[in-house]
Length: 145
Length: 181
Image 1 (cartoon, rainbow over the protein chains, first blue to last red):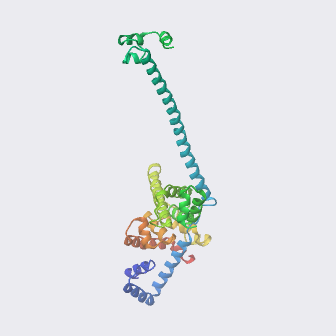
Image 2 (image 1 turned 180 degrees about the horizontal axis):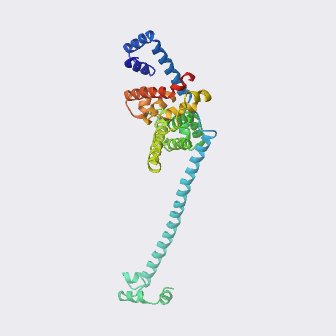
Image 3 (image 1 turned 60 degrees about the vertical axis):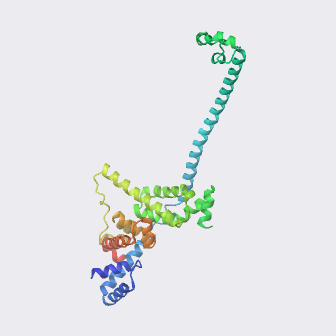
């Protein structure tokens, strides 16, 4: 069987022949019982392939997909919630710490003789900073309170 | 409800709407994935992954292509990735040649069992991946040659030549049972 005609036959199933090619194929089909048999076999094979198509992944496939999506969403949501709660807790601790530091700063400046770094740390004079750093903690607390 | 209405509802968190979309497109995804991978244990995972990826893409889906084409493209890409993963794994863990698939039964066996779906599936699995993809999209899913070309991102001429060669190969593989088809 001529290779070119066979090629036209295969392409004819996909609607890709121009009018001249279609006329050539029709005339070859009319003249050749072998080509007609080839066409019939090809048609049968295409039909069999089409009918072999799977149509489902089994029962409750959609439910399984939706469950996976829900689980994934919950996991992502759960993760975000944890970080958000950490952020919230640390924000509160940071605010309290900043308030205590500001209070101590203002208190020390009010107690001191002037505005200086030493006074801010609770030392009476600039030279006292060393004393503050080396002084026993008990004494410092007594002074503060 | 139309696809667009279901997509809009699913975007708003309506799981029922998304489930409806899954049910609507399960047949085409199953035909594509099982056509490419055979009826294997991984096929359902790839099917699920296809819909999960579609779900994640809902926000960016503009409807420029139909939902069916869009989902089929995801399914085909996932199936091709799975085939590549299998090929890598076969290279690493086994000396079994990739072409070593179950044989098509001879004529006598065919008469015993009949030319069933499994037989045709085996023949399709024997095709090269590129040829199998056009057979699955054109002959099984029923896409036009232009749509097949669009999904695979190849020229229409390439689709036609692959299709022609794939059909010749299929015909020779199924020749022993051709009378039963």
